[in-house]
Each structure stands twice: as structure tokens, then as C-alpha cells.
Length: 271
Image (cartoon, rainbow, N blue to C red):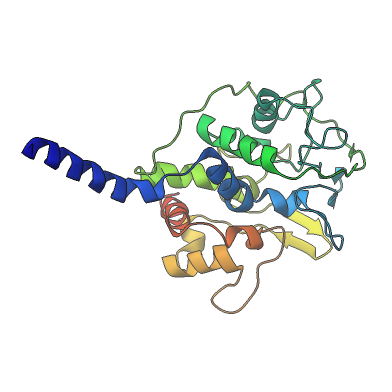
């Protein structure tokens, strides 16, 4: 009897410790899409009354004029005819079901790192969105898109949250921190090998021109961890200067404390 009581007590304690933190796939997907991945920053139009994730936002650069796709499960203009497997493959490898390449500015290099568990959670959330009919214009590219973004990604192991540095790198990758803040190579793509988080990428938009700053320890060394957390979440530097787009401040504001801390901790280890 005593053994049964002790086992039951231990079970209750474990549930108390871990139960509150348990997430369903839909909850995890909602968190990732709405904060870490910042999908709404690109896939929601600026037009008054625009429906979230229904696409339509336009991006204009020297290389392309792109229109963000409708991510809702509507069949004619959205993703309703894609299977879960096709969505997962498209997110990670930048390919549509018929084989065409998903063009810039989709950060395929970031999303290719999504773990099996997380990419399935993202798809679960996208499936839960209300259907919105919104046919977006076809994107045009003034330089050829790559035939592929690299070797096919078919499976990615989850990174344990307990490994704070590895998890921080994972979050910084899927949040496109390294994609936007790495120095561009000769082909214009982020040079993760030689210019990781070294800044220098240029962005143009209605706000004018912005240049992604470096995130290396030398560049951010004079900021405290609290400063960096504030910058990521509010888009405001300690001296009162605001960050320019395309930094997705509205989305990053919803990131969990532990996740922001993991990203900051990893950035401190860069060379």
C-alpha cells in the first residue's frame, strides 16, 4: 500500500511539473507560425481589413517582384489541395507539388532546419486556419531561380530545449535571424560558412532602405542580455532608435522568455 501511495504521489508531482508545459501539435504550430517563424509578417497584406495569412503582400527588389501566397486551406487560391507531405516538402525544400521552385523572399534556407515535430506542428496550424479566397498575382523574377536550394531535406531530428546553445542556434535559424543577418555571398545568398551573422544584407521597401546589422559578439557586445531581449521584442534600441523593417517586431514580441534567452545566449558564442 505504501509503495502504491508513493508511486501515485510521484506521478502527481511529475504531472504538476511537466503537465503545464505540454503542448499539442496545434498549440506548438500556432506559437511557431505567429512568433518565431513570423509567417504573418509576409503572408498578411497591408490592405485595410486583410485576412491573416491570406497573402497578397508585395515585395519589390532589383531581382524580383514577389507576391506572398495565400496560406489558408482554401482549395482554389490557397493550400487546400496540397497534402501534408507536400506542405512539409515545400517548406523545407522550396518546391511546389508540380515541381516549380518557390522563389524569394521565402527563407527556405531557414525553414529547411525545421524539425520533423515542428514542421508537422506548423502544417497542423495552417490546416486550422479559416478558408479565405484570395487569388494573389504571379511573382516575377528578373534572374533565374535555382533549380533547387540544396540536397533534399527529408527528416530533421528535434533539438532538445535542455541543450540551450543548440536550441538557441535552432531558433535563430528557423526565425531567419541567420538568414537575414549573415553577409551575402557572391550570388547574393547568405554566406553561412564565411559570413554567419556578420550583417550587411540590404533591404528596400516602402520604409526606404535598411541594412541588417551584424549579430556577432563584437557587434553586440556593448548590449546587455536585457537590452538584446528588449530589442528583439520591441524593435527599440536602448537609445530610443527604432529598428527598420523587415524585422518582424509584431511577431517576435510574442516569443517566450526562454526562447529569446536561448537565442541571445547562442549569439554570444559566435566568433
